[in-house]
Amino acid sequence: MEKQNIATSTRLNDFLTLVRIPNCLMIGLAVIVGETIALGTLPSLDKSLAGFLTASLMMAGTMVMNDIYDVNIDKVNRPNRPIASGRVRTREAMTFAMILSVASLAFGALLGLWTFLTALLALALMAYYNTRGKNTGLLGNVIVSFNVALPFFYGGLAVGSLKALLLMFSILAFLANLGREVAKGIPDAQGDRQLGVRTLAVSRGPRAAANVSAALFLTAVALSFLPPLSGGVSSLYFPGVVLADAGFVYSSSRLLLDPRPEPVRKVKTWVLLWMLLGLVGFLLGGVGL
Image (cartoon, rainbow, N blue to C red; front, side, top):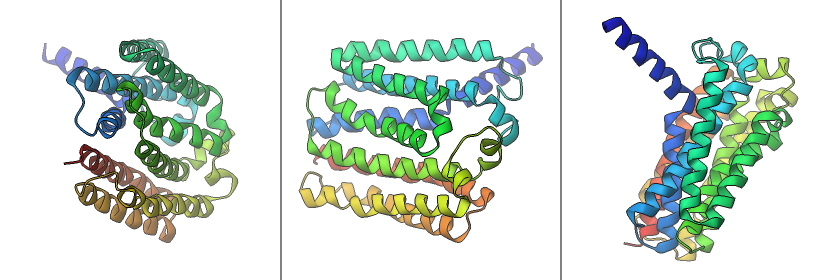
């Protein structure tokens, strides 16, 4: 019985590893932030839950699909990933991804026609990315970052209120995530080069990719002062965003000083924390307390 429990726990851990829980939680939170900004107050529980699940389940499904299509790359770059290592079979992963994606669209439909169509568009873009777009390098990075920025707009759609502030926050999220995507290509360059994935790190080298990534982070930092200047956020915006800005500046300096794979791998992990701090700032600033 104990061995069976350990085996079950290991299997569950493999499937949770596929969906990348932190990414799913963050993108779900971004929808709630969008709803909050649009309303100027916290949304109702049903809107929050449906919006959160639409985004987080879609992210989970597309992350699983990403591992399915990246299996040959992962065998070089990350051989211990669940599918690359053989611990999860491709057919199992495909079924799991389909269930997550259908559930995501169902929650999108609960919120209305336009939210359903927007969710369908996001899913189509990620399907294109996983099947073809990834090989295009920078264009693929743009597609992923567009989908990361979309939850703010989606949140506004979910509650029937679109504000200019949502566009500002979408741009900040887009730039921050694009910087992370470009940086991610540095530690993955060996596997990407073998399989013809034309990231900036492959086509221009790690130094150029690090420079572009740092420039995107620093641009996001500079633009983060626009929402307060527009008068659309409360003073609670500042603590989280200032901390996030400091983190992005630090990460940019690390990229510029040492664009080798291992240090960059640490930077891309830390950037998730800076993005989370930024989300908290967006949320508190949007409540208007």
